[in-house]
Length: 411
Image (cartoon, rainbow, N blue to C red; front, side):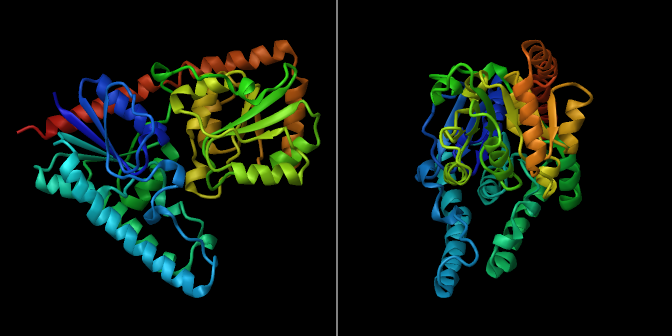
C-alpha cells in the first residue's frame, strides 16, 4: 500500500479541506497520514493516521512564531524588539525545529500533499533525505494578497512578507502539481506563481457527516417563532459584520443572527452593545466540520458576508457556502463572480451587498415575509443545487491527479 503524507500548519481539526482530502486518500486505498503542526483535540478521524509535531493547544491562538504583531501596538522599542524576536522564532520553528521533529516522527511517503507553504522546509528536508517522493502543493488562498497592508509594520513589509512569498514560490517550483479551491483563485495564482493549478472546490462530503449533540437553534435556546440567519466559517479579512448588525436592529426582535466559527466573540459582543442587540446577535463558537451541516440545518437562512477586497474574496468559494447549500438553507450571497456563477439564474435566495445596511434590511424583511410555499420552493432549488455540488466529483479529480503523478514516478 502506498503512503500519502499530508502536511498542514494548523491542527487538522481546524481545517475542513485537510480532513476531506486526507479522508479521500484513505478511501482511494492509500495509507493516509496527516502531519499537523499543532495538536488536534479530536483524534478519531477514521482511516487517517495523525502525527503531531507541535505542543501548543489550538485554544492559545498558535505558537509565538505564528502570532503576527500589529503595527503601532505598544511602545516603539517593544515593537522593534518584538518583531525581530518573532522573526527569529519563525525561522527556528519552521526551518529547524519542525523539520527535525518530522524526521523522527513522519513515516516514509510515496507522495507528499502540502497544505499552505509554511511546512515547505519540512517537506524539502524529508524529500532530500528520503528519496524525493513527489509533492502536490495545495494553495488555499492567493497568499500574496492575504495581508492587510495598513496592518503591517515596515519590518513586516520589507522583511517578513518577502520571505513568506519566496517560500511559496520555491514550493510551487518544486511541486509536481499545484492545487487550489476555485477557477478565479486558480487564475490569480497562475499569474503569481506561473503555474496552471488544478481546481478542487471545497464541496461538502456528506459521507463524513456526524450528528452534533444539539442543533444550533436548540443550542441558542430560541423560541419556535424565531427566524435564524447563520454565518458559517471563521472570521476572515474581507468579511464585514457591522451593516448586518445595524440592519438587524431595525427589524423585529424574533430575527436572530449567529456567527458559527472562531474569532467572532469580541467583535460580536461589541456590536451587540452598540446596536442594542443583546440576545439576538450570537457567537456560539466553532463546530466540527463533520457536524456543521446537521448543526445549522434548522436555521432559516445563511449569509455570506464577503466583499471583493482582494483576489481571495473576489473569487471566494468558502466552505460555508457549500455547507449552507448542503444544509438546504436559502442564501444571502454577495455579487461575486464564483458565487453568482454557481447560483446562476436559480432562486436560491437573495443577492446582497454586505456593506450596505439598506440592502440587508430589505433582504431580511423579505426573508421574514416568506410564506411556507415560497420557503419550500427556495429550499427545493437549494437541494437541487446541493445534489450537483458534492465532494465525490472533486474526489475523482484528486484520484486522477494522484494516480498520474505516482505512475510518472514509477521506475
